[in-house]
Length: 385
Image (cartoon, rainbow, N blue to C red):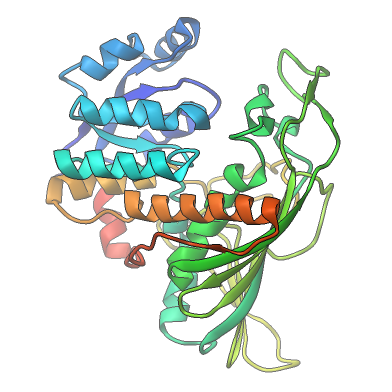
């Protein structure tokens, strides 16, 4: 039986409920206390889930807490993660790990010095869709990948988030920081590290309207570019064209496509855990479907359609898998897959993409990382209820 790690949650906002839902899927962590910069938010969370409400300083100093789950807004990820590490606690954060590379490097340095684990969302690449793609690529079913396309494009988070302003802020806003981590982590998991990026950008409408919640109908200003078009060259020489946009009403493009020497592959939505992988090995040949619905992290558990363009009406969502896998690796003293090194490399690509798009000049990726090992069923079942 696995050790059950006691987790302290900092940041009781929109995403918190997803991690509480993860308790029914995973057997080795339990959120027992919460805190938020807004005391009213942490009190509401504590009451809803029957846990203890603390201040941020109290939860950091609490000796019972072993892992800090950092669900704050992006610009606070670095500060909260750093404080957690300095209080000798392992930390798992929502994406991205920080909003600049310097801060990310500092977090890794502190974690290494104190022999602590630092993990980071997204963990969706651990799901059936990306792992089935990885399995097929390891079997060389389409040969060496030469190039590919990836796209995320929809109207923006204001359509489904009650407080969308941070996603349109000057420094930490935009689709590269918001959705880039899902696509880039999936690509690095499948192709390996990147070495160079170029790009361009555009700015959409200057004001947006909140679509849900108590501020529905309220207008707010946009302070960042809302569409990025980039070209990423990976160390294995694969070239990927990536589109990330908050300015598209709808589209019918596949999320990720790879074009290899002996065929093509469609990789399912990297923002979700499930979805089928499709392979075509010959011109005019029907696409062969590789289903993931029987995989532990590919089974359908969502049956309500999202407002995001081109997202499946039914899918699998097992967010929290990365936290559970990290907890297992802490206990067993193994290397976890949602690692700080992977997250830092993705942050480097994010920052380089934004810089390349702003300046019009190619940017070298200065970091690298090891490709995570495939998350096989035998290992997944060890952390499942």
